[in-house]
Structures are given as C-alpha cells and as structure tokens.
Length: 318
Image (cartoon, rainbow, N blue to C red; front, side, top):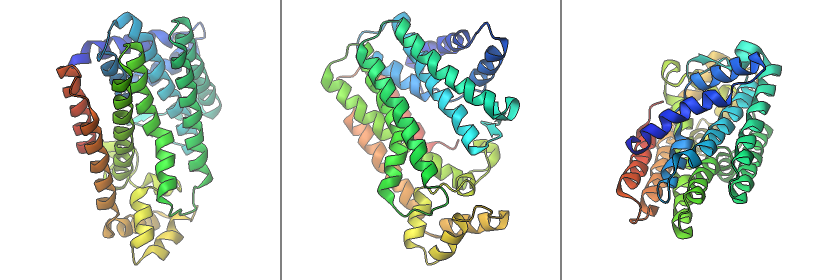
C-alpha cells in the first residue's frame, strides 16, 4: 500500500527504537516494548506522503515522523490505563506489565520526548503550535468521552465531535505538517487537511464497527468492549434512536455492572437494527470525500498511495 514510503517507514522503526533509549533502563525497556508492539503507522505514513508532495529530504522529515508516532503511542498508553486494558494488538499493555503509575509516567515521557525532538530540529513554529493543538484535542476528546460513559447518549453530533478530537484531527494534522515540512503550496495543504480529516472520521467509525462485529483474535480486544466500558458509538446511538428495543438497550449500556449475557443481548439489539449499515454508510461518505479532494497535481505515486489508504480503511478487518 505504501511502496513509495516503504523505506521511510523502515527507517522510522529504527529511529523510534533509538528515541526511546534512555540512561534509565526501565524507560528503555518500556519504550522498546511499546515500539515493538507494532501498529499500522498510518499517522507517520500520511505525514511522509504529504512531505513527498513537495521537497522531500528524509533526514529533515524523519524526526517529526518519530515525534508524531510517539505522541500516538503516549496517547494509547494513557488510554489503556483509563480503560484498564490488558492487551492491545494481542500484546500485553504497559499497564498490564508495569502497572498504572509507571505507565502514566511513561506516556508523559513519550509526550515530552516527542516535543524535544521537534524543538531540537528547529521546525517551523507552526509545527510546534499544531502539535500542541493536537495534544490538547486528544485530551479534550478523552474528557468528553469519559464524561459521557454509561449515559446512553443519543447525540450524534457529540459523537462526531468526540471522534474528531480523538482521531480525525490527528490524521488531518499529520497531512498538514507534512505539507509544511515539504514546503507544499497552501491550497494543496488545505486539500490534504480535508483528506486527513475525512479518512480519520472513516477510520474511527470503522474501528467502532469492528468493536461490534470482529472477534478478539482479530482486533486484539473482546467484541463489544466499548459497550462494556460504557462508551456509546455510532451504531449504538443509531439503535438507541430507532430500535423498538431501545429502552432495553439503554438499560444495558447504562449498567456499570452488566453481565456477559446482557452484553450479548446489547450486541444482538444493535445488529438487529440498521445501526451497522448506518455507520458503514457514513464511512463510505467520508471516504468518497477523501478521494474526491485529492488534487490531480499530486505526484502520481503519492496520489495512488493516498487512494489506497482510503481503500484500506474502507475494507479493513482489524
């Protein structure tokens, strides 16, 4: 999918391992575990593609790519503590191995290290500003989500705001920062921002769909985990608004002590409604917008990679 940046992504792995090395052996151990736990690297990939729309120099682009992925890793470490998650991508989480306190501190360290990389490489001040905006947005999204757990919100717009802050804004900013580093023309950067925001919305809605439809072996967490955690996603909101069993569904998703049988019943209610189809239609809508906004002037291999990324999100099963 990302042949044009395959070598960039390979170098990124080595640079990330180097970035988490510390005189404190435990920091190195935790950081190495997090890097080697894998991930799609979709954020630095979108960033690299955007840089390649203009003037690309790997040594100039790489530190910011590392910083972007470290911010993502830090946010996941904090998420796993909030969610009391034991595994991610089938691998033990930091909090499962080292406990909540060390995990929170490790996430903090990764955030600080990311900004240290940016400061030490003297990027345009817009880069630092947008990364700060990003971290504020990530935190805001988590606060909004945690404020609403076990409340059975039927507010679709609140859901869109939450996932924009948690996911879509991040992908938008990755595309924007790549354009800045590559010195790409402003209209192209604007188009890439729309692309990033659109596939970000599609990515998160797809993630929410997979939480309801995939098995634990595929997605690395139990099916229905969001409902179990009191998090109401788009298919569930749709079912709450339209299902004849909405009252029963509301009772289940607001129950902090729901049983396995109740969770299974909630999944059945959502699947019997048109919630999954409604959410998938929104995914398709966002992906169509992403493909349509890509300028014809982009380098052909970069444009093809962006289209393939949208296709991957539309068809992903993990």
